[in-house]
Picture 1 (cartoon, rainbow, N blue to C red):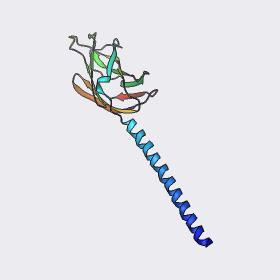
Picture 2 (picture 1 turned 90 degrees about the vertical axis):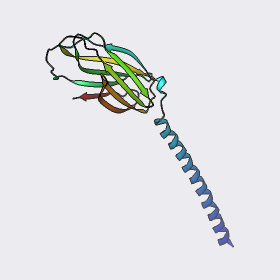
Picture 3 (picture 1 turned 180 degrees about the vertical axis):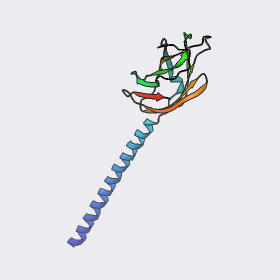
Picture 4 (picture 1 turned 60 degrees about the vertical axis):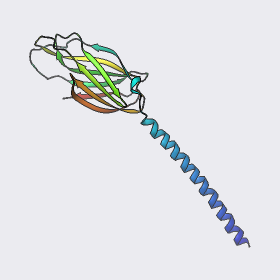
Amino acid sequence: MNKIVLIKNLFARMQKETVETLCILCALLFIAADCDSNSREEVNPKDIGLKDVVLFSCEKSTNSTSTDFDKYIKFLDNGKNTLKIEYRFLMNCCCEDIGVEINPEKNSITINIHDEDCGCNCICPRIVCFEIVNLKEKNNYEFIFLRNTQVFYTCELLFIKKVNYIIQLQ
């Protein structure tokens, strides 16, 4: 008789541990699914905006088309879900202003940087800075950079506060 009771107790204990194990596994799956969905949360494009566009003066002007300087794009965390972008490139020396527009769609942001034909025959390295506001942390964003409507660079970045990226262009 003791053997039968022992077997029943062992079987009941195995069932209880199996149910507990299954509950723990289900809870872990729900937590993992929730974390995964947060990192891919779609952004409302209407919330994303552009502010503080600044064009810096020429570093040095030349009449040639020399490209012997560092071209880059910097992505700098500016706090409060804001990304500061600094772009160094060749531009006409006589232009005193630059246009920057963004077109956010889902998690893709197209940035059009354009300068008008300013009428003089010199170029110089210049830097334009601007901020993109209301980004969601831990989201991937595809950035498409246009220069006078021509795509010159695309990249995908994971937006994490206090993380900066610098991309050297050729």
